[in-house]
Image (tube, rainbow, N blue to C red; front, side, top):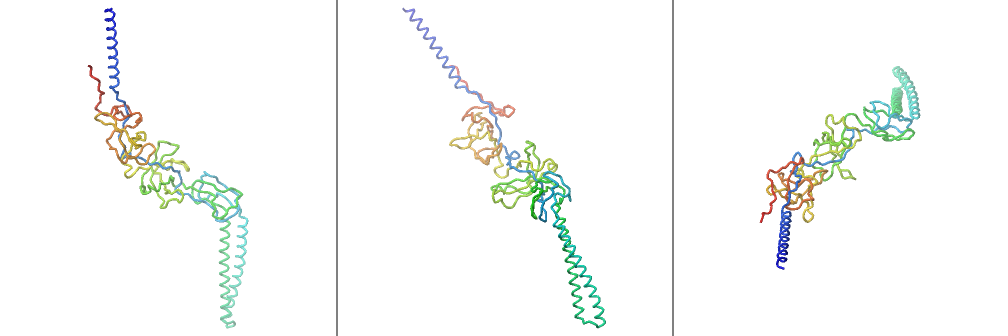
Length: 382
């Protein structure tokens, strides 16, 4: 009976020791926390300040709407949109029958006026001899001289009318005023067009620009001659240099934006085609250009405020830092307050962190950035 009790006691003792050992191991695993590697960055600033992007379209620096100076029936269209044309080239033709008849009528009126002028000149010359011989009065001669001058004026008027009629007939042909490319076509053969109605839009060959619209709230941040970067939609990542050439002095009545033109510099103007879509990147100016962080670094802090995770270089732990942000960009957001340029900000994966968690800061190549290594405390053996 005594031996059985001794065996039971030893069994209970062994079981108790095993339980104590397991509890000790469990406490050690809970107290020891492995530092999580995190990507950290310094807030951008200066040359790395945020860029504002504005959608635009490649346009010609000079765009001329072409129209007939007379109305009529459009009987022939010689070019289409995208056609390269030369100065003086015939682009379209109107039916000129009526205009030709008007020119013929003006020619006949001129012939009649010149005949009257010849007769009036002869009468004046004869009366000049008669008044010298005292055969007619001076007043009679003056009347003949006035008739001659009137006939002379009628002849000049008829000659001018003939020139106008001939010009009108010539206006039935629409010619290119200079070299360029037809950007748009707005009429077809067989259509009756009015004088001044746009038939084509001619884009000159002297330069290419990007037309953009600037927001009303930030119009004072832009100036003529300000350098910008232009990125074409069909060439992502390749940014061409440009300058803001002009800014409209008045906002559009509907969109409330200011039209602006960006001039492409140097060889960049030859690398674009009319109608291409583009983005114009403008460097931020003013307080919003001081610092910026990646969009992936922004987290929701306490009470819904915006915050970022900042690594304490002494302890190697993260803390939530409230920040004031500006207008969000495509990849970055300007920081108006709450950060310093020397802060190490967690650039990604912030939703997996918690306050006071130990981390190992690394760069994009997975290299440690802080020289001081923080080692998690381990429990002392009892």
